[in-house]
Image (cartoon, rainbow, N blue to C red):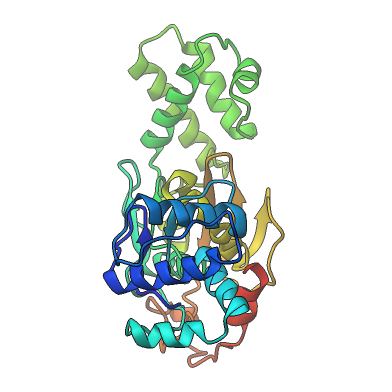
Length: 338
């Protein structure tokens, strides 16, 4: 990582970082005619943003360039690599000129990585789970994401399922709802949806009440309508959360998804090649149509570069303190997808 903060569209655009990127762009432009020359003035104007976008399009091969370079992101790595290929002496001299230095990638949950809880997401995710997500954010070079769903009460689940059903007024059964929507619940969820269709002529509050009763009855029999909808005591044993695709820059989707995959024991609906597994922190990752669904057992493992667990160790683990964690996997893991 060479630049300290983001450069380009909606970036922090620290002056010396911009100078550095503009110099690199101009070096590349001498051999790549698609990349325009820019004025090295430390300012982010339309020409500099256009040059970054062109570099992302033709050299980085991003399908949707965002005209932004993030510290240790794919665009910065590719740009630096390209310049070294063209002129081995350029980087060291420019670092001195603009008082920059190569920084190691942060691999802990600390630093400017922000998790935003959306309106319906309860703030019940443990610090341990948050730090695991921040660790994957560090691997992917992103500094923010959202949680759109965490623990759901029975009322929450009934409301969500009622809204899902009512969005398709032409559907008159569970089967036609699935066909119209393109996806459906498992057997327990279908039972709740059947309650909706059997009672849809009644008032909204009455139908939701009946759906909630079906959800509770099924749960008491050991059948969950949704992995999010559990008793609070059960949620404390395993956190379940959704991160919507829309909360992460499109250009970072692949790197973030592969970071999550590299930390997951099980992956469902993988779109990319799974990297070599690192330490396993995530019990299961499901790539859904609009979000990453993540399940994290509260094992309270020691995260990379931490001297102690991110949350108190439960009593049953107290007999084996001081377990050592290998650090070498981090760099092997990163090399798999950059």
